[in-house]
Amino acid sequence: MNPPYRNQPPNQPPYEPPPVVRRKSSLPGPLGQFDPWTLAIVAGIIIAGCMCLAALGVLAIFLFAKPPPPPATPIIATEAAVNVAPITQPTAQPSLDPASVGKVVNPMVSAGLEGMTVLQIDVLDQATGNYTRAAQLTDTDLDIFAESLNISVQTVTPNTDCPDHVRLSITRADNSVVTMGVCLKVVVILRGIPDLGGADAPMGPRFSDALAPYLPDAYKKLLNF
Image (cartoon, rainbow, N blue to C red; front, side, top):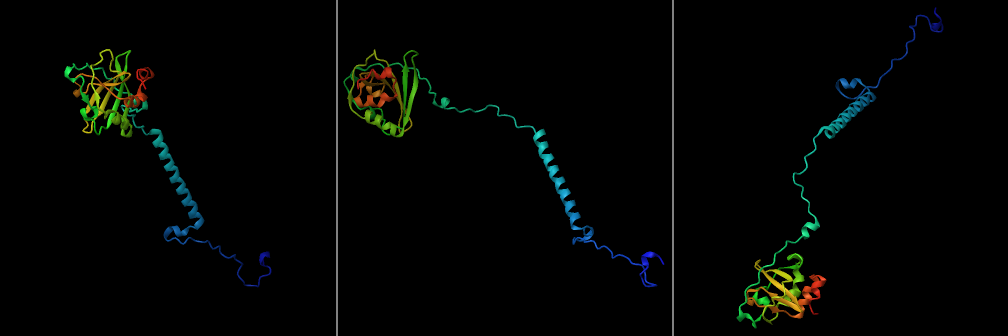
């Protein structure tokens, strides 16, 4: 008798170890032959591969995609461009109708300025003879001008030695525009309104107060406050 079976009873079969039981997956079909850990490793490898492919796709887009062309004409809006005013050349003085001198007129009524919506103030540059936009007024900024225009004044013979230091372009309630010249000589003198017939209309001191904030210092000295 061989040594490993020395203590075994006679005629007894040799000892065999118990079989190893492997835990199987509960998944049906061929996948059920693999244990859960094996399936988890395989799934992780597949997910990682998909993520690598997606990353490569994104990288290829950035590397090889053609960027969109720039706009043909870039539009640049700057505050300076918005504030630039058109230059208005001075116009000829209307011929004088002698019968217009000494008339009493109300510029607000005469020019139909009730309900005006916009007032543009252009100031003469005597060195060039051109006008530069000093202000464009709307809403409540118009109140003092509506008050200043709505008075009755007597017309006088036009002063040919006094140029139009200022031009006023006023938009009426019906969107039409009337333009009048302003001579600054002690007071604000309006001219160019059709009812004036070529005469000048010296305005009250309130008009000097209304216009002065938009005048250069050299023009302010022409007025008597």
